[in-house]
Amino acid sequence: MNTFDLLSMKGKNVLITGGRAMYGLGATLALADAGANIYLASHTIESAQPFIEELRQTKGVNAKAIAFDLDNISSIENLVKTVIEDAGRIDAFVHCSRIIPAGGTGTGWDEDPIHLEQNVRVNSAGSLYILQLVGEQMAKQKSGSIVVFGSMMGLIAVEKHNYDGNPQMLPGAYGHSYSVDKSGLSAWVRHAASYYGQYGVRINAVCPGGLQSDRTNPVFAEEYSKHTQLGRLANGDDVKGLILLLASDASAYLTGLSIPVDGGYTSI
Image (cartoon, rainbow, N blue to C red; front, side, top):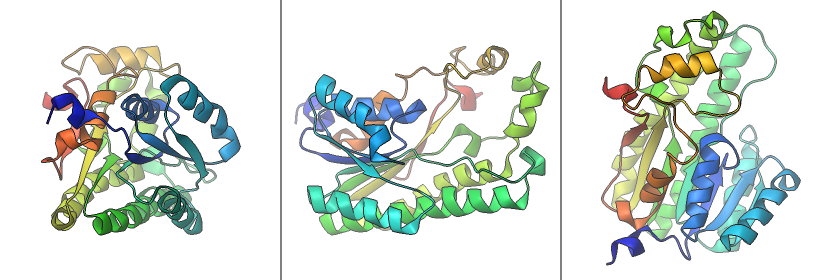
């Protein structure tokens, strides 16, 4: 088969959570560029509608928003059910969504039980549940690709010198539940690959490093960049190629991997 045909997502149905911001936005745009039918999970359909219209107009793809709350089991079930009823199958699932807990006190090493419980219950257990439901559908199909967003922070420890000149940021870098969540997803990917392989279903994790955005502290960006081989943070395009590779048939023989997208940070 032609190599470019292997990368094509035309006619493929893709469900994506967290697909409107940060790395998730790049993932959505990459899949739309490749012609995928986009099912975008969003907190509200109304808030996602302008982006949906933009995808339809600028990318020429079928796109639909579905209400979704990772903190609600019924909402998770309804999301997966709605896509299956509308599309008949899920060819690829890209899971970028996670919540930042509200309420409670403390950050980092002093993160309180309210934050810890909500983080683990929603970001870990909630993610596993939606992955389980999508995986069940793909197993029935005997095909499919699941791509989850881990983090380089799930692969290595904190480099505290990234926060030189910004000591107020350091407590947030030591969040217990974030490292548990992201390292747990990488471990689960290996675990799940050993089960889903018999059904022709692949599952891999993308583990990004820091992303340059309008919210990035410039001093942090400078210090962090010193620890990468490429000397910079990621931009909005840097994740696109890998997402498309893993979601498409071009990676038909790849599964169980956690792949850093970090400019060489974890290779040092």
